[in-house]
Amino acid sequence: MKVNIRNIRGIMVDIDTPVIEFRQPRMKKRKFKIVAPGDEHIFPLGLSPKTGYEFTVEFTRLYDREPKLRKYRQVIIHVNNKNGKTITKKKVKISLPK
Image (tube, rainbow, N blue to C red; front, side):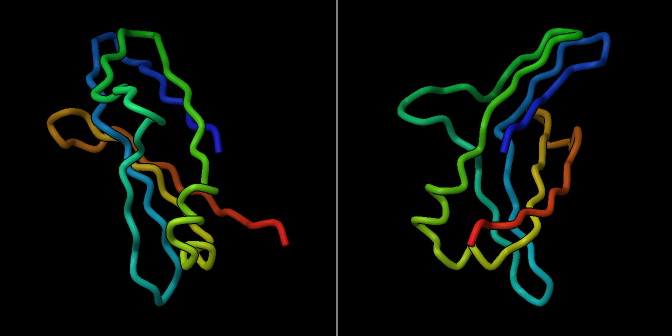
């Protein structure tokens, strides 16, 4: 899944590490911080006005570590600033190939 974060404000915004939340009715929520592969440190990320950043979330690695996540059909990406204030959250329904 591709995630595109854009700063449409006229000021600099510091983005904290995004969180991906798996949800399913009548099941507990599971949250994971999104980290870059290897030792790459991307977050916190400072976005200048009218700029953006795009990254891809690979579910395969999560599913390999936590097979129960395959039952979850709803994903929410939480994006907060460094002070913890929610900037945006996006809900996505997912379907797995058979």
